[in-house]
Amino acid sequence: MPQRSDAVHWLTLEAVPGLGSDAVRHLLDVFPDVASICQARVAQLSPLVGDKLARGIAAGVDAGVVQTGLDWLAVPENYLIPWGDPAYPAQLRELADAPAWLYVKGDPDWLARPMLAIVGSRHATPQGLRDARAFAAALSQAGLTIVSGLALGVDAAAHEGGLEGLASSVAVVATGLDRVYPAGNRELAHRLAAGGAIVSEFPLGTAPKRGHFPRRNRLISGLALGVLVVEAATESGSLITARLAGEQGRDVFAMPGSIHSPLSRGCHRLIKQGAKLVESATDILEELGRRLPPCTPDVLPAATADALLVALAGGPLSPDQLAGRLGLTVETLSVRLLAAEMEGQVARMPGGLYQRLY
Image: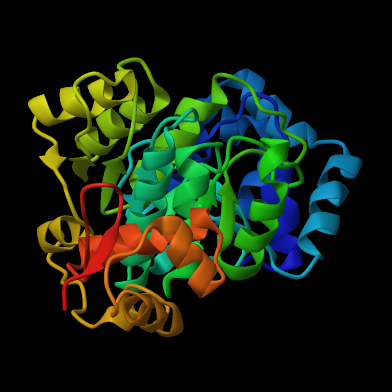
C-alpha cells in the first residue's frame, strides 16, 4: 500500500479533471513514479497527455480534496491500491482498460484469491434468490470468493451466500466508498467490509450514475475466473457483464429456467451463444479445474447439515415442519435444502415434501 506521501500524489492525480486511468498508466510508463509525474513541468507532460491535462497536473488541485482522501485512508481497513502496488489484483492487470487505482474497504487480501462472479436480476424470483445464495455458499465453501455488484436481488443473495462460506465475498460498486448504494443493502455492506471487501475505482463522494454501472461490471468480470448468470431478462446489466467476461477470456455460465419466465430468457440466450449450462456448483468447479469437497460440512455448516439429515431420518417432512424442528426461518431453510439437494443428500417429493436419500 502507498505511504502517506505517495497517497497524496495519487489523490492529486485522481482529482485532476479529465485525467483518466489510461493517461495515468501511460505517464507511469515514462516517469519513474507518481511523485515525478506530479512534480513534472508542463513541457514534459504535454507530449504525453496534451496541453490541457499537462497544465492541470502542473497546477495541482485543491488541498481540501486531497485531505478528504487522506482522512478516509486514516480509518482502519480503508485502502488505496494504485497500479504497480503488489496488492493490485493480478486478474485486473490483464484488462486493457484496468483502473489506475482502486479504493478498498475491508481486507484487500481477498482480491488475490480465485473468484467467481455471480450476477442476475434485481427483480429475481424467490427461486432465483435461493439458487444464487445456495450456489454462492457452496462455491465459497469450496474456495472461490464470490464477487458481485451489491445490487438488490441476485447480487445481494450471492453476497449473502459467499459470506456463509470460507472464501467470503467481494462487492464491486459504482459509487465512492463513502457511500452505500442501494441504501437497502447498507447492513450487508457493513458485513462485507468486516468479513470480505468492497472495491471501487470511483473517487470518494461519487454518487451513483447510470454510466458508472457498465464500468463497474467490467471489474466484476475482470476480477473473476468466470461469471455465473442466475436470472436475467434479455436486456439487462447481467448480460453486459457476461459479454464483458467473454471478451476478457473468462468462462461464462448460465442457469436454465422455465421457458415461460422472462427472467430465464437472458440465460437461455447466453446458453445458445455458448455459455456453459450449469445445474450444480460442481459443474462450475469441474469446468474451472477444481473439485467440490465431498463431505457435507464443506457445503453446509456442520451443525445445520447434521441436524437437517437427522430431522429427515424419520421420514419425509414439509419445509414448515423442518423449519419448526430446526428453529430456522423458511428462507434460511430453503437455502440449506437447495444446497443439500445439489449434494444429493435430500430430494424433493410430490407435494413439496423432502426426504433424506441416505
